[in-house]
Length: 509
Image (cartoon, rainbow, N blue to C red; front, side):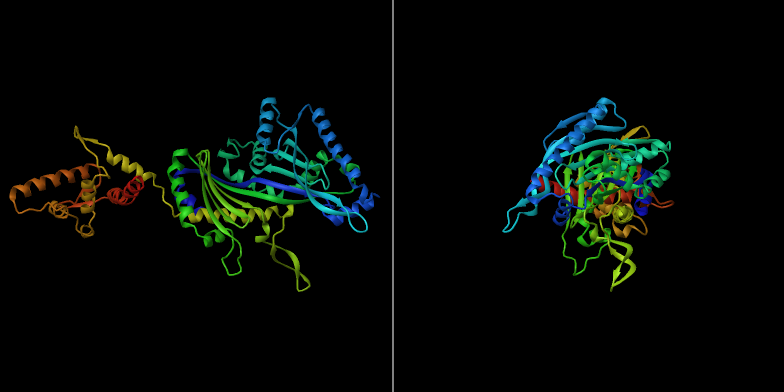
């Protein structure tokens, strides 16, 4: 990342690496058939009575949700599964001025993984089944997590999903420490003390997550204090997004560079590059799929590099923040250093990373390193904005000693031919004269009158190049040399004429 930031330091005001979306799921010990059968046995419930036992528990969860919403003076609404619930919840919080606590409760019928009793030869048998049941969504503005929601399945095994955003968490932390910032949706366009903010962001994986998650579970599942007393949820990370944001001074500073970055990332990064970014190597043992996907979306575009179920994304936020994001859905493709068994003995080594919440710190390490490798690979891309600004400036007329001097048109064959003549390689050492340019342009003639007119014409062209800063006079001689700006502009104009104009005309035809 340092290479990219150093190269564009004049346009960047800060950087921040932080978790974005994090989805945590909680499972009770009877989430599988054997565990459920053991639970029914402990409660003296026969398999044939399974339905009459579980349905009242679903009603108790629903009644608890309505009672909680009523006691807090919040709304309880039933919506379809396709309704954008988060937008609705944020609108309720904004309209009612809710800054902390419960915002609302939604319910929706959605597919779920539950149990069913089927006939067997001797006695009924319990199996895992895909059904539809009522899900409850509790939206909170948590004192630490910020805006978040808890989703609970009302049928056994009462699985829970907790969603929060790392930028909301960081905003709460910066508020507590008095750090000012400018918020752009789930990004920060400016932070008063970026180094201190990064230190706070690095503390997120070290927070006391189990106590927070257990507290949320008890708020939405009253059965934990009654029927399920003594049971606790086992929490796993279902998905994590870790973002590295590069904050630019203004949208104009990022606009021209971003288009070049998208093109480079889509066309130049190979499958081997994507694996390297994610800390993997392409070997004969790799059996997954690696894809590059560039998609236009409002108001811009994003590129995604997918390796199996994990991926890297690049997109812009509000035109002024460049975001590189690593998404981990399947952590077993990465390693973590821990105690494990090898050859029947417990040894410290590198093993596949599991989904447990305690590994959140390792999620951050893997993702941050991946983002940094990606940005360093993008450091080779140059910002075309200075060349475009130079091109516009050269095309416009200028005032010189009270007279207007015309600019140059990179689409004009005569001007491009002049640039080629001036940039000839044999002019590099000793410079060039009027006659050298005339010869390169095919204006040489033995006729004195034609030679005089051609010389005057070339002199006027060289004077225009000199006024525009493209060439300079070599002292005490009649020779000219190309300036640094001249090399940049004229070579860019030739390339633009030969490649971009030709391709554009071909596509239009």
